[in-house]
Image (cartoon, rainbow, N blue to C red; front, side):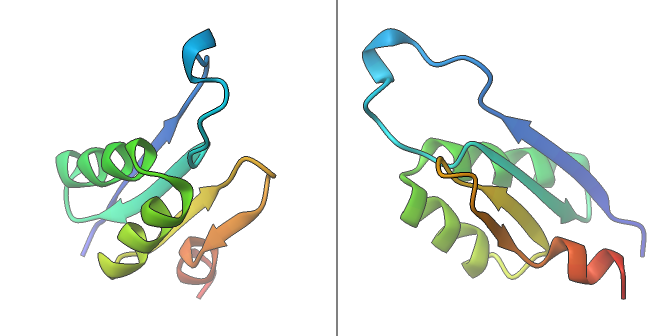
Length: 81
């Protein structure tokens, strides 16, 4: 089965939100690009813990980067298997 890969990044942060924390980047492999885009968008709008938990609960391959540049997920394991 061919999977779609979507990458979502937060590029600029409005001044009012600079003290808020979230996942900085997320990528997922999903059956369609609309599903991949939806999942990454939802993850980026949540708090870091909730966003990572959301991606984990979706049971899909994902890769995410937090504010401390920590890497999370299993997308690399799936792609190199």
